[in-house]
Amino acid sequence: MRSAMSRRCCAAAHCAVVAALLPTTAPAQQLRGTLIRPDSVAPAARVLVEWSAEEATGRLVTDDSGRFTVRLALPGTVRLRVLRPGFRPESLPPQLLARGEVRALTYILRGSSVTLAPMRVEEDRICGPRGEAVAWQLWEQARAVLLSTQIAARDSSLDVEAVQYQANVFGGELDLREESVRRVGLEDPHPPTYYDSLFRFGFIRRSLHSDTTTYHAPTLPVVADERFAERYCFRRVADEARHPDWVGVEFEPARVPGPGIADVTGIFWLDRATLHLREVQYAYVNPPIHHRIDGLGGELRFEELPSGHWILRQWEVRMPRFSGWSSSERRAVGLWAEGRMVSRVRRAGALVYEDPAAEALLRRAAGADR
Image (cartoon, rainbow, N blue to C red; front, side, top):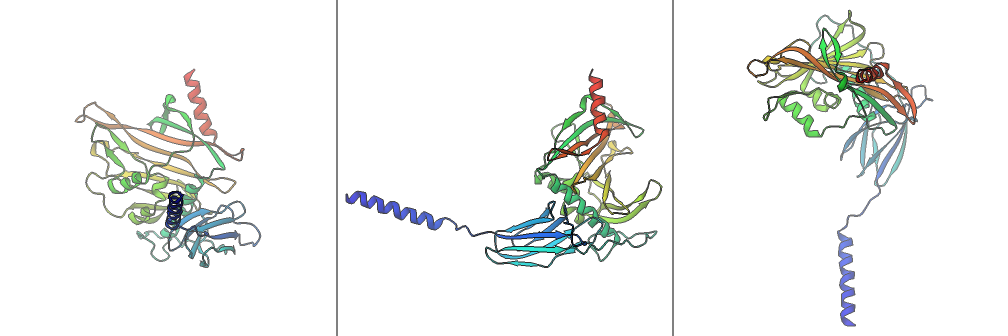
């Protein structure tokens, strides 16, 4: 009897020690916000919100009703910044959340449009956010779309179908490899180390174990990365002949690439009226000598859905085709391309986007199989 009582007391003491060691779960702090458009009536749906606190930072997009929620593990001050293409970035009043507090915030956006200064013949190169430089304003507008596109890619309400393809390039025209055409879904994201290596070691890599070279494109996560603005310089450009309705911000490496390191240069093209990002064109800088041929590079094209979501509707990368089998004889004699086009997007079962060109690729490939 005494032994059993002793065992029960030991067990109880053990439980007390375990309970003392377990962390107590404090109620999370929440900021439940609602953003309203400048008309004081319509909700600001699909608006990008950046937030920061002592413990963490994050980004989110408001829902169809203009609502968003920020959750903090610790009490503290939340700072918020709203980014909308075509409008100046807008900082909201800081919100101090006490322990366990759930606070509601309703804010009417001011809607101050971005006004670009007249185009000068020579625009200075801007490296970083210096004052009110027009090039940096344009980059901020492009960045709002890039980040919104990243967040939309994780939105479970969107069902995305796409078509992937490969083709030879002759005189700017695609000679499709029908056997390469296939229907795909969302692209799987790479691990963070993948993007780290691109910034450190460049976009063109030769394998150490085989006689092959891989071309890495400056994909959406690359150009949306915080380090992109730190490593590249910006300059406003225009092309009245080819893109009279667009305004561009050119990017180039802030430093000359080192030996054997290939970088990229290019242009973010925005709609001149709305300042919505439409296309990113890029070219490779410092490729291997025997790879050098006109046309190395590619594009990323963006689209805003009726729901307010942004999607990367198409990307394409063009790489060299070679003559000769041995490494000593090999030289670039042409281009081949790999690309991806979004064919359909459904939301809650309803079709919200369709690209006839992507569906035509599938029909063409299916016809070649017969």
